[in-house]
Image 1 (spheres, rainbow, N blue to C red):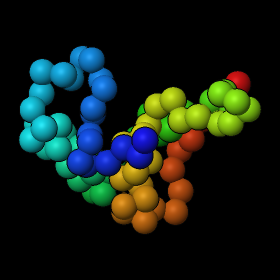
Image 2: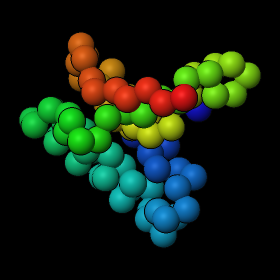
Image 3: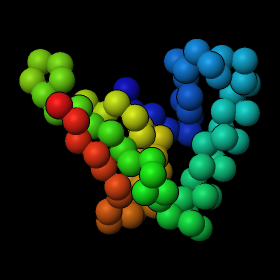
Image 4: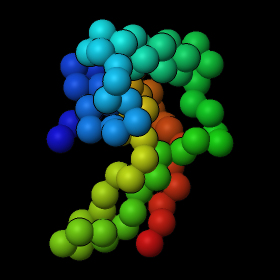
Length: 82
């Protein structure tokens, strides 16, 4: 499933108490932070290589990756794990 503003933070048990509007606001805050400050190198997008059925899988950073696409960023910090 593609993660974006419309389904931001769905499925995160620790955030089930938030309303849709609060989740969207959280997404918007992250987007504005990335727009103005760029990516924090301490929090790369984490990709597990050949996870399920031999395919790579994003483990952390779905929202950050989608925001990078929305902002048309050419590079983002990524860490690959096996």
